Amino acid sequence: MANLSLETSVAGGAAVVALSGELDLAGAAVLEQELERLEDDSPGAIVLDLRGVEFMDSSGLRLIAVTMQRAQAGRRRFALVPGGDQVMRVFDITRMRERLEFVRDPGEVTGGR
Figure 1 (cartoon, rainbow, N blue to C red):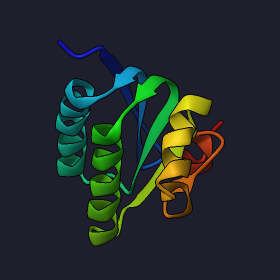
Figure 2 (cartoon, one colour):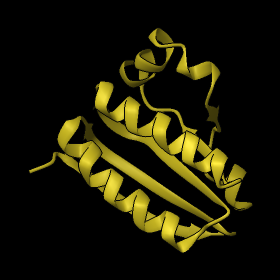
Figure 3 (tube, helix red, strand yellow):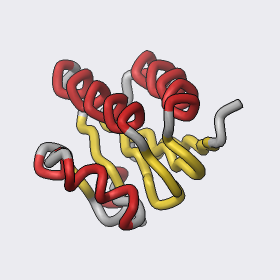
């Protein structure tokens, strides 16, 4: 059982997925299913809110990288709300922070606050 929970909302043509818990191999599988469902609905943007993520490993990072590539191919905006220091360290070490779009708040993408 994955120790990751997610809550999805749609606003302003963007889907926001707020995560909490651990984005590890089991959590990535849960998130991948939700992202595939969202992509089928064709939102103009997808935002992953990582503020509630306590731990992320390479499987979570891989899923984020693949999602970014699919978003680019589908001409869809993909952004992340930064998580805590431990989570952001994964992006820094792999230099993925330079390749991904980070926003302070999902409202920057959805048009709300």
